[in-house]
Image (cartoon, rainbow, N blue to C red; front, side, top):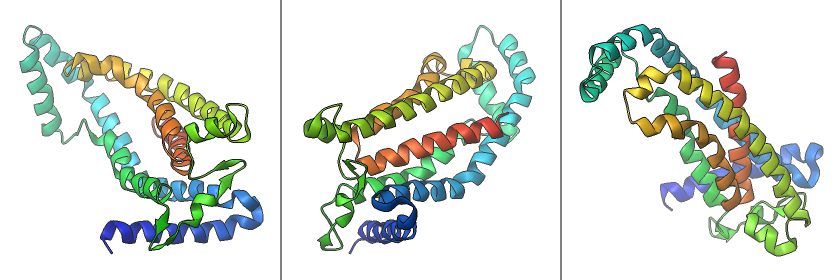
Length: 238
């Protein structure tokens, strides 16, 4: 058995175990609650990186007067300005990419969960988790399955409607946060690709596409993690 298959098998055991613990509270939705709890555990593990990213942002904010001075000095040479800003970050041991680490470190957990709820068998045995539900929607199904089963107003369709509403609300909150962060970091972003400033705030809404195409269990991971990020950013960047 490969390392990846072993990890998927271990995740299946973990989700099953969490579901057994949560069944007295959530009944038939215990497996969905287990996915949400698993996501929260992953986010707790990644939280130190989020705190480091917040410290990095404060450090970059402190450098803004010096970056403004560099902009004035190299106003006619954008390439030289970009190099000077990068040199300043290196000198002060500030990484412009530190904010990406929490998301990158979650990718393995997301892909394992995606694979777990996309596979018909785990460890040579039928994958019983595919038969678990969140209300009328199977955790192994996706939005197109829900539409085919009963349309937008069917039981599974309504589950997705609620999930989309939640993710859209969180994305709108994240959009406002990103707009504010982009405005605060304008000198640094202007030293880099100009399109980045326009694109960053809208990335919050990319989660809607992800939720629509992945298995429902993975969509729950995305929704929970996105909501966690919004609250975490509000606390750490206040």
